[in-house]
Length: 482
Image 1 (cartoon, rainbow, N blue to C red):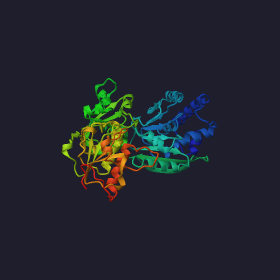
Image 2 (image 1 turned 60 degrees about the horizontal axis):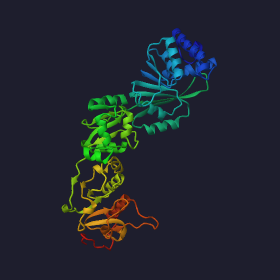
Image 3 (image 1 turned 90 degrees about the vertical axis):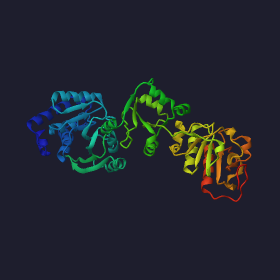
Image 4 (image 1 turned 120 degrees about the vertical axis):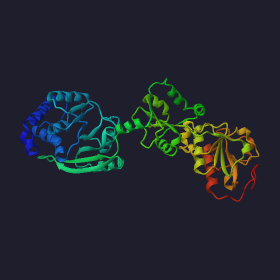
């Protein structure tokens, strides 16, 4: 063994040779039962297992503590530890029979600075390490994702790969361009073999989860919710209904993109960051007044009705002020919303904001605009809208400048919208009362289709008003002057 190591450029002391020999004997002893390696030839074991494991320490300075990810029977971690006695090595292995073998090796060899992590490593593993090394066959990008929770900023991810890994490197760079930098890509060969290898090293650029959590705990007041009987959880659960939203004047925002946008654009209206446990802390840019609610995963699933698996945001919207027909309508388009489906309410609010409608009047029949379904369908536009609370559809006076929208009526393509009007679609199903239908404009559709979805029809009508030039014919409706 000493001769083969020396021929490979590795000079060990007698004590190190004895340690490696002890490890070799244990590997041979337990291999028939545990299938620890498929290499049985002595020279092959020394060169392709031990020398291969030791070579990264000759090609670069290894960081400490160093996590050997998916170590299996202890490689490259144990040979590296023998070669570098001052190196602190953590052996991570999820298969329990191999964990038992590693514990046997550790007990027999009695090396300081060798620790066994008897579990698989995922992004929630947050024990701080300065480096990770692996011979595993998993893709580079998947491994970089796996070690997000434990690898320190400026820490090194060291991959012992075969020669054909260019596609993996490009995938990793594309997925983690902000989190990791390719530091080294070195081709080498295991001495006295035909085995070509690549040493690929990434440096971490961002902070790991354990640092982000610690900083978040300093910036934000935090609270754990672990029982369904918790009063705060009961209040949060009520926000899944229009009644609860209306009573508490608060709402739950879901979806990573929408949460990020609202936190960025409306920080003063954000009250709490709600995560499943403590694994997703508020981002560094979150305002300090934001509370951090750490909800037990099972309870978080109840609140996360859309299954986004990403943190929720608790917001307190601006009050919806009352509107009366006596207040009149401003110039431009005002959308009157009678929809009872919260998703339709969200969709029409999104369309109205996007196409320049000045105001949105929620009629008495309307679902609440901050119902979770409405908020999600609006893409967050509900916070950008001017919302007013109006009367019932049946109480709208006929002398208001209203353009009713129905499946029957004047072709919208031949209608010139006035400078000041309210666009009034019908309730899903029943549509509009008869006296409004007689005055309505309609969107022409193909025969055989009864009608368009109410929110879709409203969006089309808003587009016609917003974009298309006014036609030459304009019916005269009550309350509308040419």
